[in-house]
Length: 118
Image 1: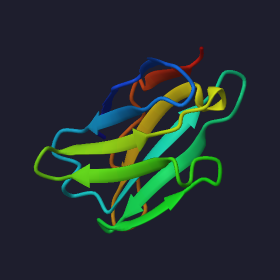
Image 2: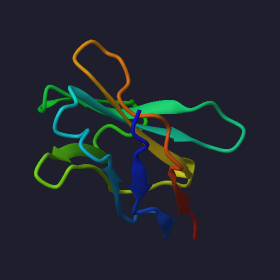
Image 3: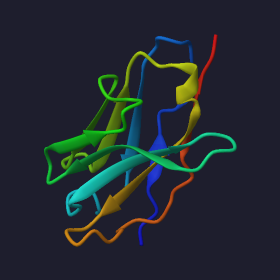
């Protein structure tokens, strides 16, 4: 499996925005589903956003209306646009890709740290 590389995290004030990127060599264009997860300290990893078939999206209730997932096959990149960030969005964010049968095509990457704090 290919290991994805997540980037774009950082420290941002509440109400701010960040755009996360995920690259996985040769895997984005062939993926059927692309997911973004996050894991906060002391908590289990949770799914926050997914895109399937190129255009069907779904979001966790906690981020719906604030986060947007998208994919760019030409750039081999998956994005997570995060707006109106809250302190509870603080976590390490990871991406993962899946094939048509729901099997993962990437392993877990290192993730990218997002910290929302004033």
